[in-house]
Length: 88
Image (cartoon, rainbow, N blue to C red; front, side):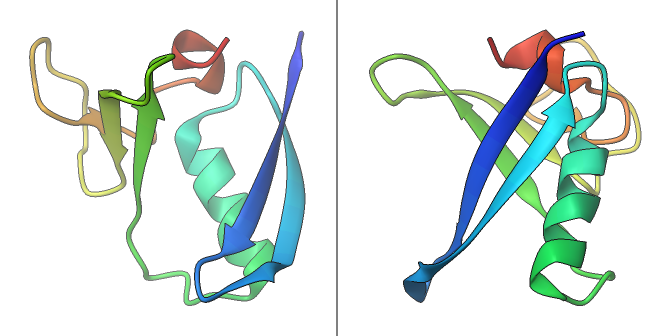
């Protein structure tokens, strides 16, 4: 199973970075929890991820507040969406 490596930086200080490795079968919720743990953030915080195309236009939005994926919805669920389904 492929492994994706994400470099996550703190918005206010680009010098604060974490490299996070996630298996393609893991979900965006797993990625969210890894970010929370690596930066020692409040676990109650919610997150929205954006998947961009080659020209930087947002194609998908994935949100922790969404419970299930519904066809044609504006946001997908972090719990139900595997990383490998949207990232290549």
